Length: 450
Image (tube, rainbow, N blue to C red; front, side, top):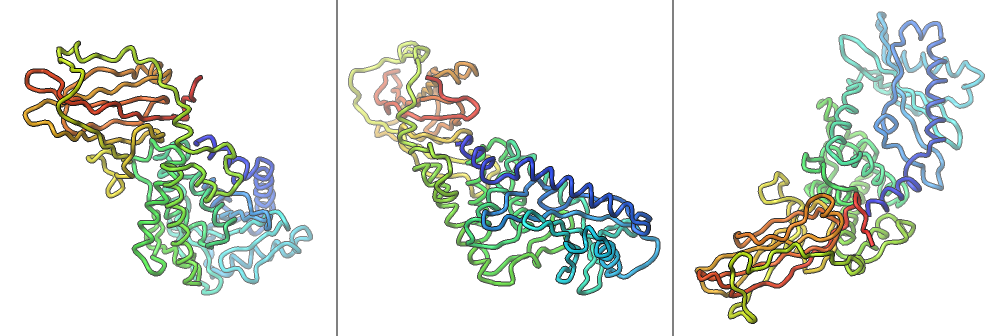
């Protein structure tokens, strides 16, 4: 399923190389234009990417609207005191007086930027950023006030959060949610709010999650967060706590309700896709998502049981087996994001599972044994891994070991495996056994071999 997500991102979500190059070219040309202006070059420090372009969360525009936006921060340091509107007007005047840019420069309805509109392709928002007293400020034309900004602080925070995920998982989930916003038309929440919410929900334990699992767990956490509010909550800049992103919520209260509803439905479908039938991914991303997906039951049936000649027999432990057993024992299993002692508060349990299920990698499974055997007795467990993956990773297991009524195991190796529990009397006789409880894993890092 990881491959399906990556393929969908590449073909439907990610900005292609040609478009990225056109953005880079525009950044260079606009920068040269400002740097060559006699007045601006005296106070110009640098020009840096900002927003989705800098965070690498920029995506293709929807098909019915081919334009996307790019933000550039124009860093200025002026020894002369001027009002905020001065800097916006200064930059706007240079473009308006240029034969090349005068017909594509927009400033009338802009509060903090000047826009260069490359019609039917993309537009660039130029945002003056004033450096003074070791702080940085953007200019609000409507209020004629300097507003504190964090410069590179936000991107440093975001990339730190992204580093806690596997293969840029946070960046990819952010792109996917923005894609869903643009193409579903069911909500209009601004990108900065989406990005901040998702980034703030990342935990240190997410580093092992593949993209389908990370997408699902972040939707679940986001759903839990949003369910606490009836109106848009305050979202603060994690790099500049005094900056509130409230202005980026839609003025329409209905949009917040729409966002909540969408995330709730997406969370439900994502869990169904992981644990019941992968076709639920189509309910989220559309009919063109991974045309080869099949049900988890079909996938499980296709996974063969590997060689298990390495498993230990009861007699090798001097445990006497019987042809029939006077008592009964059975296994119940639960799928978890993490073990009970792991720091994944209130998000550990996913669902109870039956034998022979296909399970995503890097989850934890808690097995519990139930028996009507009279005490005292000992409990033995046997975990049998099979297949090429476990063999190559030197992860084959088959030994009997004494344990308790609970046994935790992790989904790691591609293949079909089983666990079995044994109830052993004080005389070292097996008086009950659970039978094999099968599990199936497909780890994207090691495909299933025929």
